[in-house]
Length: 142
Image 1 (cartoon, helix red, strand yellow):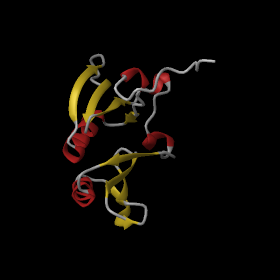
Image 2: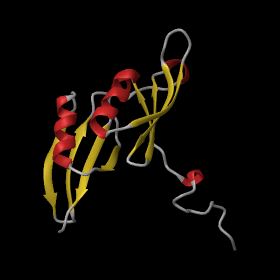
Image 3: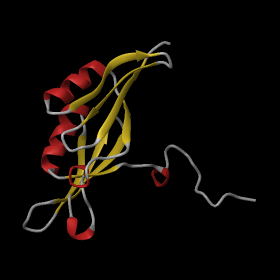
């Protein structure tokens, strides 16, 4: 019996999981992710004369991240509006301490300081200025 799920080849974008973050200040979020994570903007759709970001695609270390401004009229709300977010994005970075410093310098709030873990990561956690939680990690020898 064959699986109803598509092939899970890593190079097939049809099988990619892409976080889609809603933020209350889209331009500020693009700037934050660009400076902190080295994100590259791939494409953008700007909404009507109001100028809200309908969609931005960012590329971070080969992975995609989608962003939009809030659109309350269709139920697209940010963590700031709904009182927080229960999930976190885990991002592998080359230097946890450096990325944490950049994030804090740009308004993030530290939730866990960088520390070596027994399972082979140096990691940390912060909330970005838009209410999204990030766990950043660098692999180390346990």
